[in-house]
Image 1 (cartoon, rainbow, N blue to C red):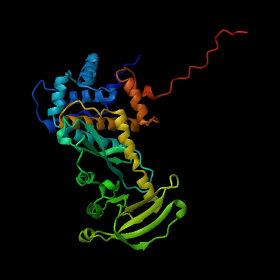
Image 2 (cartoon, rainbow, N blue to C red):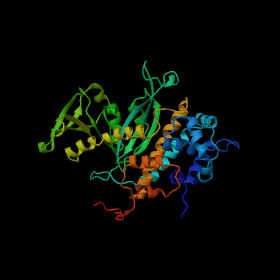
Image 3 (cartoon, rainbow, N blue to C red):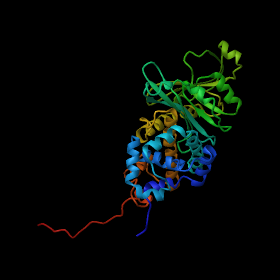
Image 4 (tube, rainbow, N blue to C red):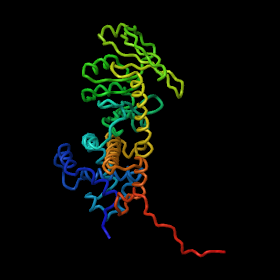
Length: 381
């Protein structure tokens, strides 16, 4: 009978350990002997994410109940006080760096987006993570509540997060977006929360394409009208330039304005873009795909632990969120490499209920063997 480590151990082996330790040494330097290692912290927080643990005590008791498996995980003992201190004091920037490494590795096995162009396609958006105003006064969102904001750039090649940052809730979407850098030729799609004409102009100068919805009440004049195919839902295709005083001062380039009526809902949308060559229908379809990032936020809130936090410091919150995103990338990488047909949610649920089982992880996703129909039953007549 073949020997297998636990499902948890097989999942964590997907993390390149030598790169992990090199990152840890670069961020933390030499730490005192006996302190909780980065790997032990990561194993504990990953166990919490994959098993649905909701408190430090739950994590401690869960790992303690599987104490004999620590050897295969390569981790040390986990006490809730030590884990709490590590989450508070060890910089979460380490897990941001780990996230970047895992994305680069995951990106190599991801599929391509459905559009005909070869450019990278990213969707930018953010979501609020509610917290207690008394515990996190620095994250005050309004007089009634506090929240952190998770900013994400979703890569449509595999639908995986390529960029992620956690800020206080009041930080604007465009403020964080301006700190990001994208490969030349990339296509960005975002909603009106990123409405900054000057930034759009800078993206154009950098050779980056973008698609968004036009601002309500925008002042512009039409420079050119293009023929449209109304059978595809396109109602207008124009080249425009903004005419407000601020636009004139910023020397904005002309942009393309596309009107589109959704045949399913009958709603009319107006988009702007700096891409003048693709069809108007393609521009509308690109923006329609922006909802994939909303589905991503819904998925991580339902399947990972980022709604209730294990620590009361901003660093602990960021650590928990970044570990959750690292786990997402690890599961996505596993799905790509194993060429699994199951959805990521199905994969996550199977791993959750078999986390400490000793069996081949691939056996979880194979159909059970056909046992045939038994015929040795008593016939009644």
